[in-house]
Image 1 (cartoon, rainbow, N blue to C red):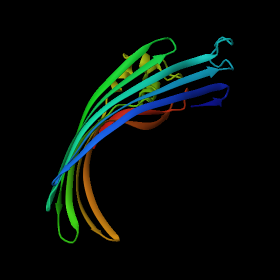
Image 2 (image 1 turned 90 degrees about the vertical axis):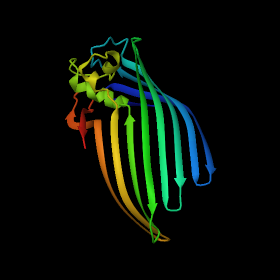
Image 3 (image 1 turned 135 degrees about the vertical axis):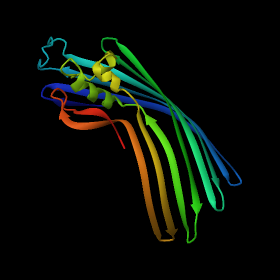
Image 4 (image 1 turned 90 degrees about the horizontal axis):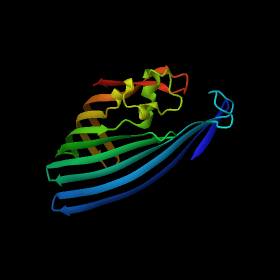
Length: 235
C-alpha cells in the first residue's frame, strides 16, 4: 500500500494476497513422486487524483481514475524422479488456470482467462570421477502481466494515450488486444557436471525458442513515462 505525488498528481496502489499451498511426497525404492495443488488470490487497486486541474476536471471531483485488478491462480502439478544407479530419469507436468478481472470506476468489468500445460522431461547419466551428463526438455507458458497489457496499449491505441492505464481492459477490440497472448518458451539443454568436496565444474549448452515475448523498445510514452513494449518472437 502506498501513494506518491508528481507535479500535482496523486497516484497510489493497495494490494492484498491470500493463498494455500499443499503437496504430498512419496518415496518407494528409487522412485519419488511429488503431487501438489496450490491456489491464490491477488487483488490490487490503482487510483489517481488531479488536484491542479491538469485534466480539466471539476475541482470538486479530482478523481482521475480508480480500478482494481483481481488475479486468481489454480495450480496442480505431478513430478516423478527415478534415481537409478547409472541413469536417473525425471518428468513433471504443471497445469495452471489463471483468471484476471479488472473493475474500473465506471463499473466496467473485463475478464481474461488462460489455461497452461507446462511439461518437462530429463535424464542424467552418471559417469566416473563423480561426474554426470544430463539433458532436459521443457515447455513453459505464462500470461501477460498487467504491466505488459498497459504498456502495449499506450502507443498503439487510437486514443493517443492511456494515462489511467485501463483502456486495454475496458475495450477488448483495441488494436493492442491482439497482443494479449501468452509468452511461450521451449528449452532444450545438455550439460556435463563434475563435483568434488570443494570443487564443482559445470558446462552447459542450450537452445531456447521464445514466442510472444513483450520486449521494451525504448520508446517512452509522454503520458505515463512507461517504455513501449512490442510482442516479438525469436530464438
